[in-house]
Image 1 (cartoon, rainbow, N blue to C red):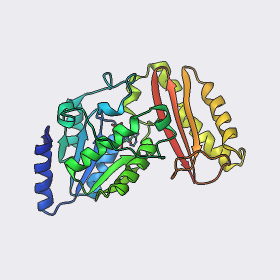
Image 2: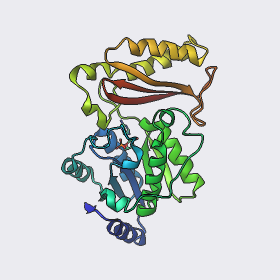
Image 3: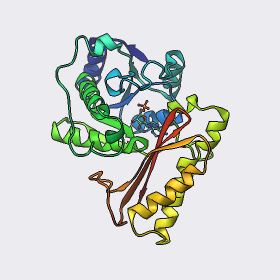
Image 4: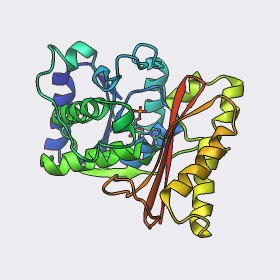
Length: 281
Ligand code: AMP
């Protein structure tokens, strides 16, 4: 496995592979790998001849009061895991390599970022879209894999890729979960033992949403939101950031329940903000 720290290094490696006629898959990450990350890498390995993974905790997607400085990092462990899975190249730039000077150019994906995390984390998707555009230009892969765990991010990247004509296929990968249903996340490591028990409320609330919709127990989004809020608030340490009920393509809220329906949650459990979602068809 090749480990590249600079843009020149990763570009040279990928261009060699491409001139050999090999298909290159790409998995952008912020590291501190769990099975969810590894499932994306395995998917890329299946779909391409060479897989590049980037590990970069991108400062421009964190708000001033968010966890950029404390975000969990363990590069040695990550490199071992990537190697075990069979990844061919890892790109680990430092902040100066990615942002040698203050960026003056930003990628802003309109409308799709008005709600969900776009509303509660102002500037977040501007940072995400910009760093992914930079990584796409640096790595120049044939395909890139993103998790459905970050459903809004996946839609934002799909749209940016289409609007800016990146010749890259975007692939969505299903949410990887702990045995009890909690969506895997690097941030789960922040949870205390008691908080970890409460964290299951997100998955359970989404299952409840699916049941209420399937059994026609709710007809409006506000009824569904009320039911989910009551359920989540019955767990200790929880504070709801948002409960989104809406259109999975437009990422706009709906009033009346109609399929397909995206139900997406952001809930603080203690100080840890967790997200999860379900697409009800
Ligand atoms: P992150 O390192 O958290 O920025 O995530 C890197 C990629 O892994 C993103 O495309 C995420 O959507 C994806 N990812 C994170 N958690 C999961 C999960 N539990 N299941 C599937 N994909 C995930």
